[in-house]
Amino acid sequence: MTSSTPVPQERKLVTELPGPASQALHARKGAAVAAGVGVGLPAYVVRAGGGILVDVDGNQLIDFGSGIAVTSVGNSAPRVVAAVTDQVADFTHTCFMVTPYEEYVEVCEQLAELTPGDHEKRSALFNSGAEAVENAVKVARTATGRTAVVAFEHGYHGRTNLTMGLTAKNMPYKHGFGPFAPEIYRAPMAYPLRWPGGAEQCADQAFAAFVDVVHSQVGESNTAAVIIEPIQGEGGFVVPPPGWLPRVADYCREHGIVLIADEIQTGFCRTGDWFACDHEGVVPDLITTAKGIAGGLPLAAVTGRADLMDSVHSGGLGGTYGGNPVACAAALGAIATMRAEDLPGRAQAIERLFRNRLEQLRSKYDVIAEIRGRGAMLAIELTAGAGDLTPNPTATAAINKHCHSQGLVTLTAGTYGNVFRFLPPLSSPDHLLEEGLDIIEDAFAQVLG
Ligand SMILES: *Cc1c(COP(=O)(O)O)cnc(C)c1O
Image 1: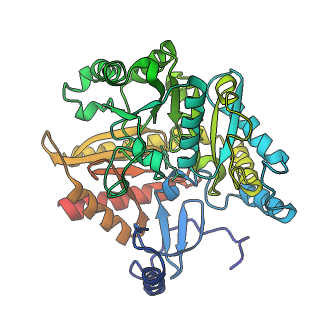
Image 2 (image 1 turned 90 degrees about the horizontal axis):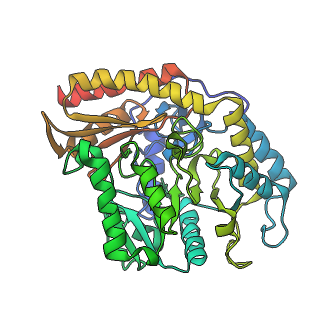
Image 3 (image 1 turned 180 degrees about the vertical axis):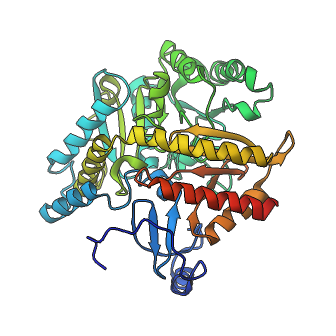
């Protein structure tokens, strides 16, 4: 099979899932890979592109996950493949801190141009989202001379020690892995569906609760940073009410607290704009990006106000592989694709297609308490139904399993495991999105009758 043949854009099942070749690989996985590295759908992939993943048995699966919001430009997107192929033939590594190269600088120039705000910016590149978050905290602490970091309930920021501490959910991310880094405080998240005082009161009361945590429990002058996902990812695509995020941003500015927007999942066209902060005109002091930035190659960044970023001593930021030239070439190819194909616009079109279908589904099933999200980052939250908001992880898991058996790669999320999140590649053609939604509709009918 040559890579020049495009991946056929159709679902095809030639075996049950997982097929025999995948099962054989999965047995090898069990004997060689640590059990802690879990797998959602053990169909072993050999090729992918557009909206399709091809497995080792020849099954063609519809992708509603993008490898967790990474392959927004598609798998093996042509500009990414070309840029990576050229780069890998030229040189693969020098370590930017030893002998630098243009690709790193160019990615930082692109980040300065694309991220919110027209102030002077600097960036530093890393390998993973968690590493970017760690470094954003390092910058905030150096710049302010303060130590405390305030994060939010339902937040997710990674799996390293500091970022586990920032992450809210215990299982599976934190369980048994403590003790965690100190000086992390958690404020209630503005989660309209589950706000105790009701959705109407959520913006005001959640803002007051946040201020109370900072003021009463931490102290403004001890607070280096507030870190927030403008739309929460793993926490279940929680969208705060309009106006709440700008108020948090104003409060931070007033008190010299560094606002870190963690846009690792929301960034790079996913929500129908370049960044989720753009929807409310919020300009964070620092922004962390990763996932969608490089078409599947590992790359992450911290971008922010030049005065903050440049407060760190020379040599204080870096790492052996951070901003690897192949990953940087991939990012430049991915960003060129986003511009050329207007992927923010494509994400908006995907939202229209999905919302229409999900509204129809909700009119049939009252277990769907809410449809939420933005662009091609949409979710439905499943509850007991009939106004009872008790989370329904059982139905969520059963529907998920059914989708997997039909060759649709779906992802769940949420602190209570009761959210379906939809993150299709922006390269997916409409007919695959419609077919995936047909499968979801069928799964609801199978599981809920
Ligand atoms: C995925 C994610 C991270 C962690 O990124 P890794 O590359 O897995 O370390 C951090 N923050 C958010 C919002 C994420 O979605």
